[in-house]
Length: 160
Image (cartoon, rainbow, N blue to C red; front, side, top):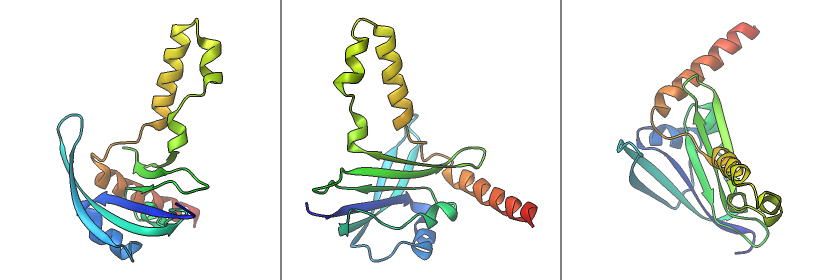
């Protein structure tokens, strides 16, 4: 493990070329991944793989500024947990960036023990955790990213 790990950046296939122009470089591999959303909508993604990245950190936040949704995943190292950072856009064109490490998936007994006799409270805790960990789906992200960029232009005009 050490302080280097493997990392990937995943973008929608239709935005892969633009992502390369904005920030993606020096990757080791590029491959296509096809997935289906829960409603069976097919989505095609491009995954860029990197090896031996210090702390698994890739400096790709400019993708968000360019209206490109992404998921950046990294493996655990000796001193840090594995995890992912996802950037998506809401239908209103707002940017939502979420970082989730593998430690975030677990409940600690001190959270659950006080609730042992209260199934409703346990359910609420689980649903809250689900909401915290939920990533917006890939569906419509190209359109929502365009809305984000439009809002940024409007905000700049209003500021001047």
